[in-house]
Image (cartoon, rainbow, N blue to C red):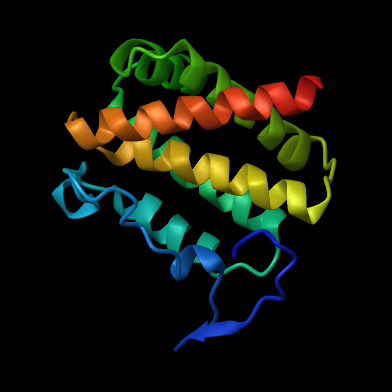
Length: 167
C-alpha cells in the first residue's frame, strides 16, 4: 500500500516508477473511471506529470505535479492570476469552498517547499502528493456524475485532514 514506508522499486521499462504508476484507479463500479470525460490535457502538463510520476523523491514529485496542476488550471480557466484561476475553478465551477480551501492549503505546501525550501518528512510529503493528485484529477474531469462523486470524496478527505491537523 502506498505511503506505508514501502521502499521504492523499479516497476517500469524505463527505470524507477512511483506508486502513482501502479495504482488501481477504478474506485467506483458505477459509474466507472472509464466513463469519465476528461479535458484535452495540455502537452506541457502531460510531460510534467510523466516526469513527476517517475521521481524517487516525494518533494520533487510534488513540485512537478504542482507545475502540471497550474498548467491544467490555466487551460481550463482563461483569465486572472493563477490564484484567481484556482479559486474560480474550485470555488465557482465545482462549487466547493472545501475543495478551494484544500487547494489553497496545497498552494501553501508548494510555497514552503518550492520557494522557502522547507522540507517536511517523506511520509507527510507523500500524503500531500496524494492530495494534489486528487486535485489534479478534479481539474481534468469534465462535468459528470463521476466528478461529483470524486469531489464528494475529495471534500471528505480534506475535512479528515483538517480534523487530524487540529487535534
